[in-house]
Image (cartoon, one colour):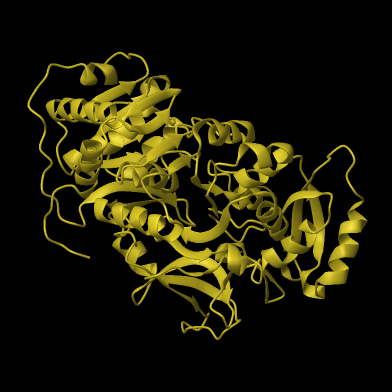
Length: 512
């Protein structure tokens, strides 16, 4: 990756797109339409306002906003100024937000008005900007947009590795791990996704996940840097997603698997109201084979599934043609990326053997902020260690088996949760399930299954699930306990929250 100082790559591309098509629709959000000229006007105004408020290149800005137009404007203005954004979920507690912002050395704040009083606490010494309304001691976002005209801000020259975003994640100890992403990396990721899925300036791209996550950021930046149109949902429901596709003529989107399963409940609307879709991709968490097959059969568009992580972006892709023979896989490595399996002995695992998924990619992150030891531990030579389990078949297709920390070790034997979950999910009454370790005096751990049924008022007899497991699983894989819940816990991206389940029901071999 180049190291020479260059103008902001994101700002340069956005300015070029705005100059080429000023009246074209750039963004639909909050029920509003922004042309490229209108969006560029707001980015210009906010850049001037932020600079006047003392925000300079390299300074860290905590961002706590829902999906809204100001979030997108801040993304672009920060790129122009060389600011380092630290986006965080508005749904977190004030204590958790402060903890993550401390880990990322946040000095300035941009926050939704309902949160302003909760997350200040006098711990940040820089500017405090409030969005959506006014708050005592805070500068209104609207005032920055409406401030006196000044000379246009000039994008500083930035090293290619200059941080642009610190995306917060948590490790096995719960310590925040800020993932450093440069503008160069974000551009590479947007370009790679565009090439992989054939996205052009004529596409209308839908983002329906939280903008504080790298997936939604990619789905917004990809069209805005190339002259396409971005549609952003404030909040996902199957109805709002389908309505957005139909109303705006959406042609491309990457959705998380839990969203796609929810969309499948609206089967009667899928054929007529999703006709504009050219390509749809499943991301984030593994989509079960049944749901994947239904979507391929129902949708009149290309349907892909990808595997990746915030540190590496998309690593593999399962194309529609390959899905016919490799439905259970998450595809092969995309061009320019190498994916391999690392065995427990620290060497590459033989074909078909399970191990840790590792990845070498030009789209990798720049490390964990101020955590060199954690960054080094996540490396195997020039590959990133994902912490995920997988196996590779002879044709180079990757099969995802779960997180390494989710392995159940019973009597010294590794049990992979996905093997149990696949069997349980094959029962027509099961909506979702999770296999977790339960403490056992004799074996250390045994298999427990937390399950939610499609009709909780008329669940099947648990002995039916036990019989199914006896037919398809080995003795050491047999669940010793079933725990029923109305719905399994999820995080903000719709991923199953196994940590919450383990903390509630599991063995004490963590802490996490």
